Length: 108
Image 1 (cartoon, helix red, strand yellow):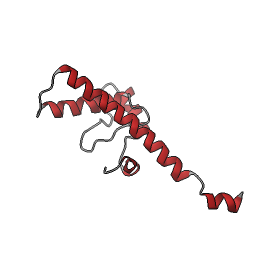
Image 2: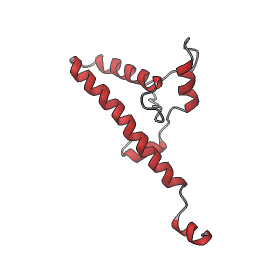
Image 3: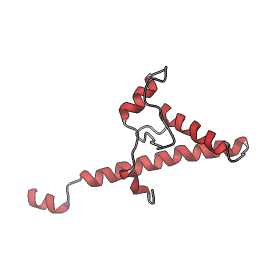
Image 4: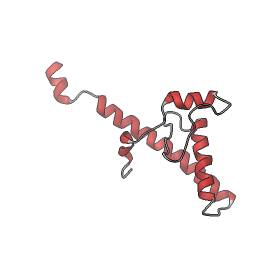
């Protein structure tokens, strides 16, 4: 992703996947992964995204050491980024589905 609005072309978790993951306790459903990383943007604080954060944190911890305040700050930034991308996605989808001004003039 080069720009925030590129989120429109990124594979995201489907609501069905995230909801099934939330309800399934034995791990028999699709699980969040880092490759590819598919966040569930409709609910940034969902169990799906919490699992993504844990996977990401574990991956980072293999290469870097951080103190507790730094981890908290990174976790906060992770969820803030998901919220930001959620807003961008909603805005881009409204723009895609909104009738153009020429369509409104022709049919209005």
